Length: 344
Ligand code: NAD
Image (cartoon, rainbow, N blue to C red; front, side):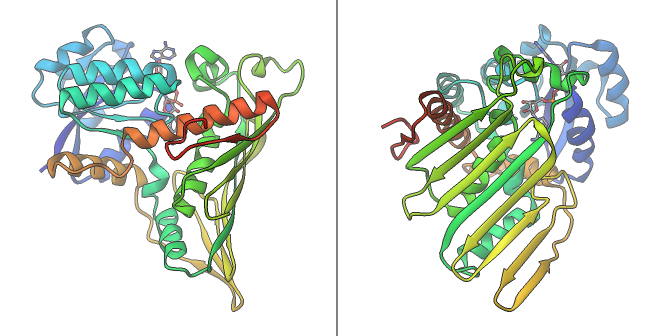
């Protein structure tokens, strides 16, 4: 059985990655599009077999409530709009799959979770790396003890923010992006530390570096270096940057060896290397769309009435932790967190 999906927002990521990925999915079918640009929607729709009566704009979006073909709404808008469209989708009786970061504030995340609960519908945050085959394999090997006790995770995510790219323009505006490189890509570094250790942070420490007078970073941070400490004593040394050439790397160092994902979070062709006493070995994984995998996981969770792997609570936790990292950077000192990721 395939559930019907409506994609909200026809930006760079939706057009280049998500719409084509429906072709590889087994439980999810693209049936509707929501866009502010009618012409664009009409151009895109026939390529994916979406019928004209299933095109909406941001005003008519709420009428999706009357469309039984749509089971799931996938929100791919600037971060500050995630909460509004998630709540509206729940009011329309739909399940919601929402891009990362889940929202801008902790309060927004809580409102989204509550709206889903009240509507009796499911919410999942699109953490594709948790469905990417090399990352999944790295997690499995850490859990099985292949590198011994995990003591250190390092992860760096960086790229050049391009003010000429429309997809990067809202990323320079705090009211739309919520934060800078940390919210956008540092979240992958943070996720890696959490899913590799399988633990929740007890303390964070962040440092922001912005080049003076760079107009890109008037409102949001460029570079964030941050450390996360876990209950077992494992520590993560993490970073995000909007001013370095592309890096998407995750490394797990244990007592008996290490696992290196480089690249770790590309859309395809990631690479996993295992290093032990015996030497270095590339772990070959079958290429498989992480996008189709995460969407199908959610469709299947809805069909089977099961909690998805990365529900709203997972997105909320990251927002809490990232807020603490900002606060730490502001105050210039480490911040302790309780078991829910809230400030202690
Ligand atoms: P984008 O700018 O290309 O797309 C955003 C879309 O929202 C555009 O079509 C834009 O027209 C529309 N929009 C509607 N209202 C808007 C408003 N008030 N201001 C600006 N745009 C408005 O950006 P993107 O890179 O596609 O990112 C969209 C979302 O997807 C973000 O939340 C981002 O974090 C997420 N994303 C996730 C991944 C991933 O790998 N999971 C990758 C890229 C982006």
